[in-house]
Length: 396
Image 1 (cartoon, rainbow, N blue to C red):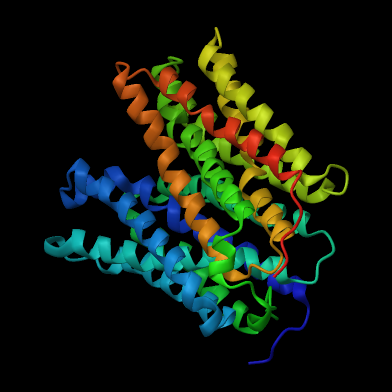
Image 2 (tube, rainbow, N blue to C red; image 1 turned 180 degrees about the vertical axis):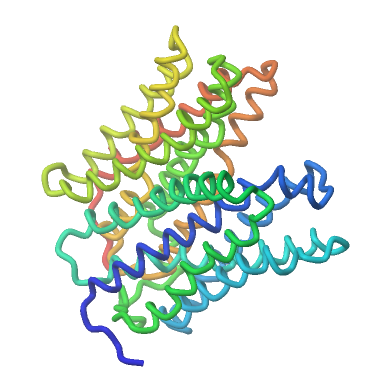
């Protein structure tokens, strides 16, 4: 198979990689009620689908710190898309037998979660290693494609189900599987660069001794938590605390949140040379704090919805920006750093919504109280980035 030579193709394939991850994370949740009805599943069994997905991705993040550099970027990223495609197709195929539908569904989740975990670890360093001039812009634009993928999954699924009925979801699973299948062959052809030669990489032990690394890990946890605390609860918050309909809550909540988050990343990708990255992150953290306060204390549903929606814009730069700051502060860290930071981000994605739910439950299911508690996450980011601005880069 003839190889492509322009690194632009590497970046395009990486965009499709993040769209694949968006499909992996967001397609199945749209079918939770369908699964419950068709396969007679309990709420606990449905919840386990999400739990297993992110637990497997966390495990893959951890394993990747040791094995990716030994195997190589190309075999790993190609395998990631094989697993993702197999999992999505498996959703349709493995659930054909009613007696074993749930087992087949969980096997599918494990397969596509392995793919999603590898994608999360590898795509950022693959793009970082490309010979681009504006690294922060490339990283921000890259991560915007997860948002566009999320929005695309919701809109395409909604249109498909309206046209053909939700009972045809297996066909849509194959349609979505076409994205990773195409990317298998694309990644086989594009040039792939190594972020740091293996012999020049900072040893993992040395990385773990760097104080700046642990500060970045804390910021990464809070980045994931700030994003998902609002994203996961925005629909329920809009419906219960702001007294709007579920349809409006869904559109003004998670969908608008994802659109504005992607917009923020795309805008910074275009104008990154105008605003220094760390200053942008501090401004975004301040805006995020303001959005949480508006959502919680707004006197009208409209203002509350605006707070929820604009929060998506405010958190947009957190995840890709932290990766870029880490690349600047620890240029010799290599793939292990990206894997551990992806793990930290996933921990935050799980912890943020959990904190909101737990605090709300302790206060009579008051989501406003839960979201108010989550304000600690952007506050920590604000303080952490301010602290980082005074630190120098670490050598190998």
